[in-house]
Amino acid sequence: MWSDSIVEPLTTASTEDALYAGLLFGAIVGVVMLAVVIVLYVRRRFQSWDDREGSDFTLEKLRQLRDQGELTIAEYEALRRRVLATCKDYQSAPAEQTDNTRDRRG
Image (tube, rainbow, N blue to C red; front, side, top):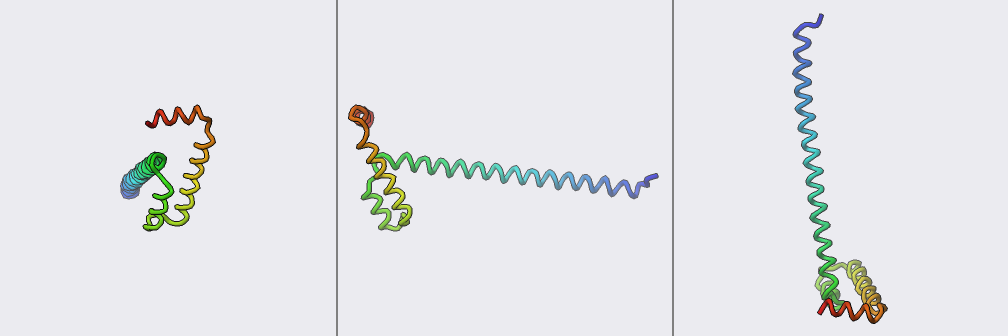
């Protein structure tokens, strides 16, 4: 009932569609993998920033960064509040805990 002239284009079209679908799927997987790599990189950068921040980060350094234009005023204010909160937490800690912390750092 079906002639070869009708069946042949359908077979060719489905092969092309399968190739297109495979390429599209590969492109989507590639974009997702690239996004994961970018997220992990950014996360690692911010995590290392947080680690560096605690040890020798002072208000004077914050002011210098702000004055040099490396921090915006909003970033400066947010970091300043964070440093001050850390200082308040450290001052309100019990004496025993403070002594142990100093021993580990020294």
